[in-house]
Image 1 (cartoon, rainbow, N blue to C red):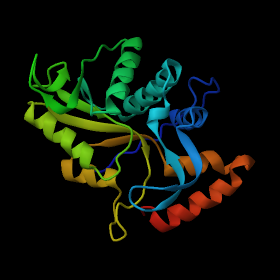
Image 2: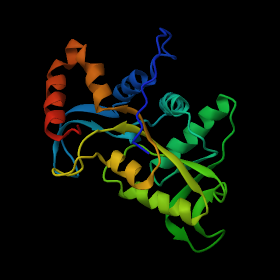
Image 3: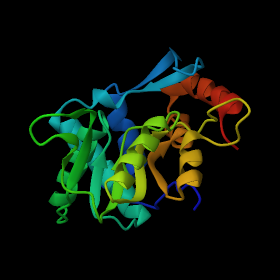
Length: 232
């Protein structure tokens, strides 16, 4: 299955029904989860923007973010019956998304993992609803190298679940290595044969800032970055 990126056609003017990509990017800017400047990434690249989902650190911000996730997931029409949040950032994201789906009338079970297995009490590395026999949607913030997502997939398989897809907030849409042709999200989707859904990607960020004069200098830097590192 090919990597999936959802672009629904929404023409509403109500702020709560505007295209979830634009809503998400504005929420990220308001929360300072999305910033522009010069940032050295773990890869060593100098990026003109940086995204940190940890800055969605209030109930209102998380609720708005969860609504964007839910819109992206519903647009993709995935078949799943459990949400899984990989430790650590995936835990509040999956929990918030479960609350949003419950608000919309769908009560979904939630599970997540510990970084280290617990040897006392109930023990084990999993917390929450049983995964065995479930079709699992993984909820996380980004896929950088794909290592954490692959670990989550191994956990789900070991627990008897079936990965149904992955939803992330932002797809940087850039090659993981200079010689690579794929992004990390595309690589995971191809290897695991499951869809990866992003609330928004670099292309959406470029469209979002392109028509706003206050972001002019950042738009040029984003274009240059995509030209150098972006996927075809």
